[in-house]
Amino acid sequence: MVTITDVARVAGVSKNTVSRYLNSRGYISQGTRNKIQEAIDMLHYQPNQIARSLYTNRTNIVGLVIPDVVQPFFATMTSRIEDELNQRGYKMILCNTMHSSDKERKYLDMLTANKVDGIIIGSHSIDINYADIKAPIVALDRFLADAIPVVSADHVQGGMLAAKAFIDRGCRNVAQFIGSSKVRTPSIERHKVFAERMHEEGISCATYELDLNQFEFSTYLTTANDFLVDNPTVDGVFASDLVALAVQRKALESGRRIPEDLFVFGYDGSFVYQIAYPILPTVIQPFRLLASTLVDVLLKEINGEKLDEHLYVLPVTISGANGEGAEPSSAHSSKVRPRISLPF
Image (cartoon, rainbow, N blue to C red; front, side, top):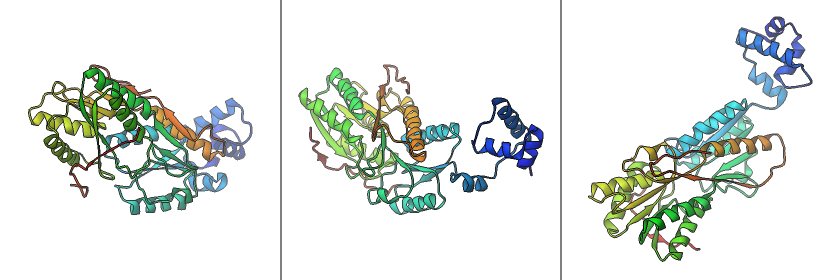
């Protein structure tokens, strides 16, 4: 087993110098740093993380808590966040709650017991007191507690972009699908502004609410089928990408033309929207920028730095005419829930 003594011998420096290099303490010339790193690489030296964490009071591990890693938005965010953390020298523990508050509580207990440096939370549990968690936390598109910072896309901008697309298309009778209103999330703003713009243009707009933690595509297909049967005159649908794709598929199966008979517009912009045919126009969330901002904010919290703000809102883009865009079995009911009214 390679030790710090071996690294010091090959680098031609003292053990204390290697220790200071590993723990980022004190001044070390760039030439000496290069020699130590070359020795580490040559010997494939792995520092004792337990010993380092006891010395530095850091584990260099961050927990990521999400509701469903299979869901394309969360899958894409998980990949981007892991990459950002890796670039900053951190490892990630993925906690996939599978829509279970009990499972999430156990994950949170495990993360805090193992003293992770911080936690990123994007789960949709509604009965957990996040303010009681003794660790730096940043929220992904969720309002968890007053003192917990939030990073989200600019949903107002996204709702405006989507609304413009329906107005330009000439739609007169549209519907939008929203997530459960039980979850406090900035994403509701896109639906509020969308409904407001439809109202201003004299376009009929009905809003339908999905069940809490309804993420499985099979339930979306059933919901879409029921909706289209009950609403034969609707000429436009706005929803997150997977729901929009389910509506598009069921519309095509029923003989409706896309987009001639039914204009379907998505929101998210993960890889799935590019698979659809006909092309699914969509608002693209800035996955890489969301991830880098989440990590930036969390590291500031970990380091005890003052945050610039509490809510970080990042710009979205929209897919082009060719569908291209750029980044800066279920326990749930599958029936369409009653339409709701959004204030504007």
